[in-house]
Each structure stands twice: as structure tokens, then as C-alpha cells.
Image: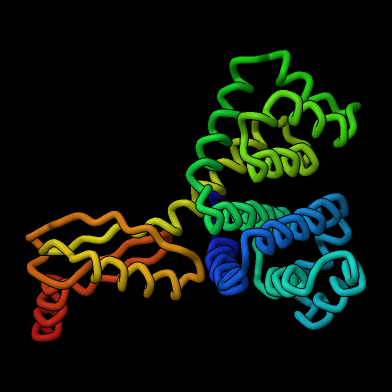
Amino acid sequence: MILLGGSSRQSLVALRGTLDKTISGLSSEDCAALAKDLFTALTAIDSSIALRRALTDPSRDAASKSELLANLFGGKVGAKAQALLAATVALRWSSSIEMVDALEQIAVESLAAAANIAGALDRLHDETFEFSRLLVENPDLRQALNTSADTAERKDALLADIFGKSFAPLTLALLAHAFRGARGRHIERTIVAYSHAVTARLNRVNAHVRTAIALSDAQKSKLAASLSQHIGQQVHLNVEIDPSILGGLTIRFADEIIDGSILNRLSEASRALAV
């Protein structure tokens, strides 16, 4: 995930939460369409300094910024993308570039969400990493993909010729977005950035559970269903048996920690008595 400081960091956390709510209940195809819309907006916003400044100007209220977005992208992107864009500009960002960085993050995560719903998030993660390795090992391929004179269509064709039979369609879609949205970076830096964003989504849907005793299959299923409802996507559990917590559960995923262990309750009670 991108590293932001100050108000931008908290805004990104809030924006990712909004993304989770937006994609709750969507199909893989709908999430992929959302990602495409976000990438479309990302390219337009990143290309205009004046537009970036207008969308992050603290003297303008959220309603006027949302109206500006509607004028720019109405009819070009879907309603869910419009709502996410409006949520983005309503937050406070330390700089206009950091707002675009955050928008890029959720665009990639939207496509990763499509892969997760299709049961292919691990494959997307692995293939993105594999592609970054191939770029390092093959300077001719790297040069070809970094050649700005080539059109996006030619690069898409090159991708399909080389990787069409080995990479998943969603991986090819992510790589195609990377070529269109390099934002002045060499392709290898863009792929690394996208790989980190995919990892962030992977971490978000893998919950690490510590429990004092083994959980039954029914308990695991109930817990996974509850967490899936909480973040709006299928959640995978990694369960660790740790008698030191005495009882209850601790759950960690993404930016959240849920500590319901007996040890934590005893610690809280001890602190309360000490006051």
C-alpha cells in the first residue's frame, strides 16, 4: 500500500472503508467495471494540475467538488464510481498528488476485489509479482513496454501475444491499466506500485485469528461469514492456536484489530482498577 502521512493517511483509511461498502454484494464483473471507471477518472485527473488543485482546494466545499466531477464524468463512468470519486474529493489530502495516489490505490484494489470474488486473488497477486520479475530479467521487454511512442492498443496486443495463454484475464487487465496510467513512471515502478496495492487487498481479505482452543468447522464458517459481511468481501481465515490468550479471540486484518481475548479483558480490568 502507498505510504502517506498526515491527513492523507487517515483519508486513505476512510476511503478504503468506503470502497469496501461500495463493492459489498457486487459481482466480479461489476467490480472490474468499477475499476475501469476509476482508472478512466484517474488518468483525466492526473493529467491536469488545475483540476487536481480544484478537487483538493480546502476553500471549496464538497458539494461544489462533486458537481465538478459530475460535469466532467457524467455519462462516462458509472454511479458507483461517481460516488467514490465524490467521497475522495470530500476528504482532506496533504497534496493533490497524494489524492491521486489514493485514487490509484482504490482503482487497483477494485480490480483485486473482482479477482477475489472470482476466487482468483492469489493468482492475480502471484502473476503481478511474476511480471515484475520478468521485467527485471528481460531488458528488451522492459524497453518495449516503456516506449512512449507505442499506443496503448499496441502494448495491449504485445501483452496478449506474450502472456495471453499464461496470465488470467484480470491480470492482463491490470497490466493494461498500468501502461495507460504510468503517470510519468517507468513501467517497472508502476507494476511495483500496483503489486503493493494488490497485496493490500489480499491482506484485507485474509484475517489472522488467534484462539486459545481449536475452532470447529461450523465456528470458522460463522466467523468468516460475519467478517465477510463486515468488509463486504469473502474473507479467508488463518487460524493460530495460542493458549496464552486464555480464551476468546483476537482477529487482525488490514488496518483493524479486534481483541476479544480474556487476557485483554483482564488487562483492561486491571487498568480500570488502577485509576
